[in-house]
Image 1: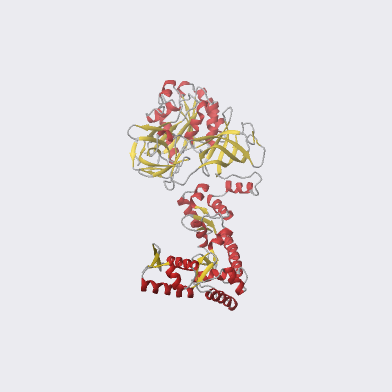
Image 2: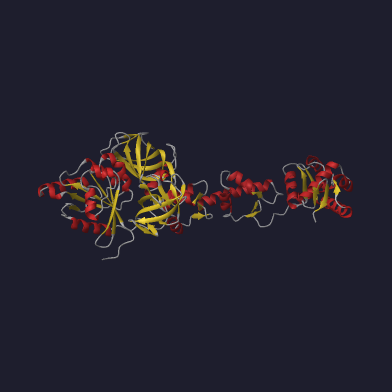
Length: 628
């Protein structure tokens, strides 16, 4: 026997009630997929059931047995999302029935592309009836993914045709591409229960990623962080559960009542609950037309919600037509690009259409310029092209996690795509932007900085915070700094300039600066206010204000209080007098030091507080002593 694959093929059943789906699964696997007491009592499948087996090749198959009754279609839909292939079941004694057709439509709308048809209960009819049913099946699947798939007649109770079916399942499984276990964890939850001594357990088909014991994951859309206590695949404890497998996960940090079908277990920060999506919506040919703002049921993965449909280019979508639609959900659902939706009418609840998600969590105005063209590109472009275009049109850098959520790409897939597209710029370990967008922003910023430096020639550069306030007021500081790091400019403390060294002052500006300094130095430790100094030197604003700022930055002025400063030369002389007096006489009061300095009490208080700030002196009671 060949070595069994790590990745089981997930095969679902579909078909009308009482056509023998559960009996067929039991005949194949020896396991009864009906687990609920009510199912066993009534003899019908109500919720999803699961079973597994190994094929002759060694390939493992996990079966998802879905209910066939129309009242339980919502449960059937929850099982479709993880299917690699489907077995469409048609009873020989009844043929194609309404639920057969609805299930087939659901499978197509949700993107199932592989499978085969099984005619069950073949032992109950004669050959003529069997041929008639074959003809009905051929008509029903014409134009669908099952049109050219095998049709096998079996009787699960007698074993008729079962060997042929197993051989066809083996051939079907061999042609199914194995999923990758790279990337983020995404496990749509289809069952939740408690096990005494272990706590909360969830099950589902692992869509992507690898789940390991002790991993921290997130429940979406609630956002609750949980820890994986243990993992099982086919009732066997394993170290790792890989994408494509049916998985049971024992969770710590959450109570049973806090978890429900429809939630997704995911790598933290990679998926979110949204209340709006844009989808390419196809209406079934036999569905009635759907008007704008119609209320519907929306199913995706194992989740469902009520919603309203809003069309961008029409007031009504006709039978068999396809259009872009914004779907505004009445409750949040864990959705991302490429997820497939099923739309069912509000009442009566029947399947009317579905299609893929193009955008999740983004709201649009109906008359938004270029919207339809953009959605057309989203529909037909590859994911990296969509990422590149989106980044190029973005007014600011985008977090990598948000790019992943919006594109549906994993971190590894995004990294591989970026290697082939150098136009996508990674700003740091958090943000992406397009090279053209970066260049455009830099061009605008350079104009702003040059204009600022012309207006403020004595400053050592443009304040970084002022550039942010002008060009990026809503950006996070980290985002702004990441973009600024892409420029060839010098960022010296808070100043931005174009050369490593500060530009030399012109002779006129140097003369004006010294004139202001001299005027303040003349005041000594009895400085006058800036307004009086400005009037004395005759220099207008903003040049006077910029000169003051430069003198403060150079340390040639020291601030006493708003509007009042002491020149460095006067400060040094005053500091010398205070230090000598305290060394000679010991700690001195403000009154004593006022006499030493020969200035008023107000000026003495301001100067001594400056010495305290400069850690020359410290106050002890009513006196001051030297710090060292």
